[in-house]
Length: 393
Ligand SMILES: *Cc1c(COP(=O)(O)O)cnc(C)c1O
View 1 (cartoon, rainbow, N blue to C red):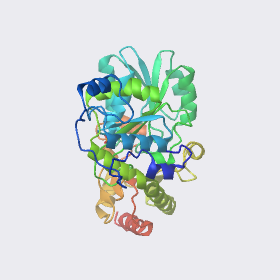
View 2 (cartoon, rainbow, N blue to C red):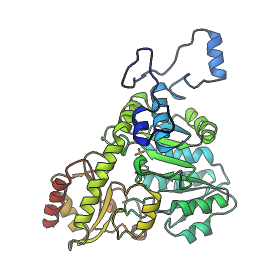
View 3 (tube, protein in one colour):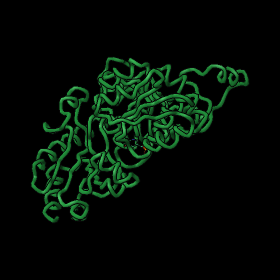
View 4 (cartoon, helix red, strand yellow):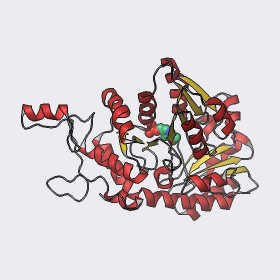
């Protein structure tokens, strides 16, 4: 495979392992185990596993390896390890590198389950966690110490779409010898420049844009060959977070159209955000592609595009937001994102209901806030749906 190919070419061709039949579309190797010609061959494979050799699907599988190699090529990473879900990837990346006594600094505006891992699980095993406001570089500087092993962040926060200055945080972290771990779901592999900005480890929930068609759960950890092989792989292959070969096949096919889908969805999101921003029925429209986004300059510097998610703060609080959601005919109410279907959610009563009122206030999750993940529908149809539902408030 040529390393000089552009992302869109890598997305279609990288990682292919053809069988003796010369199939065009990647094969699904639905097998748990692999056969050896002799006990000597089995012994040899257990002693030293070659690139195209496998011993058990929890350790690796040809279809899963194709997905790992392809996403690594697209993201520009040396290596990848695929997992059963995005959370298995976040947990695997953090737990495999941390031990009791280590310190980690994390931005506070995190996906709920990520917050749970940092706040409830890692601390139980003696890892010290400091939370900061991810957009405040002074807080990062004050929190990172000589014994800080890692920093963790989502460069676009959920659901208020605040941007963390990844380049600046990476400089602070690296000066202290800490690794930078990025949950990059909202940025997407299409728009990511995370490794260029200084990330050491990038994690995706493949459930989101990579599948992008609402079918399956998956995740992936990307990093250096050394980190993936020596730190992540031993942990994950023994603790059982492996991606299934069938899922890997769907994700591989998802990668082939990822760029097209994400650019179309992001383009529609831009059209919608521009059309409704300033609308008198809305208190705020937040989209990283809008000129008035608080961190528009960082968006332009650290991402190839603004993502596919818009946040709208509807005047009139929860009641008005619920009337708006109930009046939508095309956009569906659900909590996934990155899907071909446009999806809307009311964070305060669903994804972020576990938080205290004070935490929600702190993160800007107001009662009127809704998060819209823009799909592949025609932008005119989506705009008409949003406008008629706003009328119905
Ligand atoms: C969805 C999501 C996850 C978790 O992914 P799953 O595939 O649902 O386990 C983690 N982080 C972010 C930012 C997400 O959006």
